[in-house]
Length: 110
Image 1 (cartoon, rainbow, N blue to C red):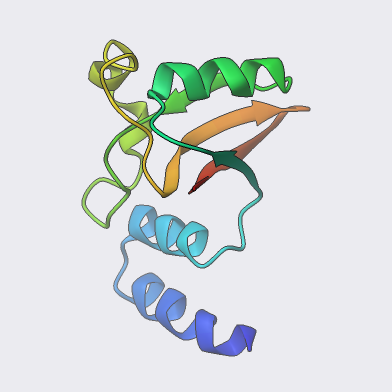
Image 2 (tube, helix red, strand yellow):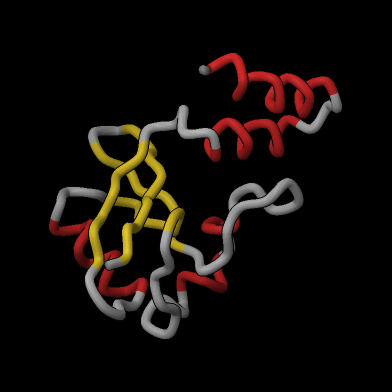
């Protein structure tokens, strides 16, 4: 099963695009992640508050999904100023740190 996921990663690595390769690696679920269940509409500011209560720090959220061109959209300081205006969306929403490890933030909307 995992070999199927390693082929695209190997293809990206062969192309010499390390940032895109790392993003592809995370998309396939090999990176650590925290899953947060959300019922109804919630802003990313509310999600950040929930993560903080769960013991996460350095919370970086983005309304934009990662892609090969922008593999870490949560690092854009523009989004940090708009957390109260941006709704959470199903799937990846950013990253946070717990116990010294950065993890992906995944939301399951109900």
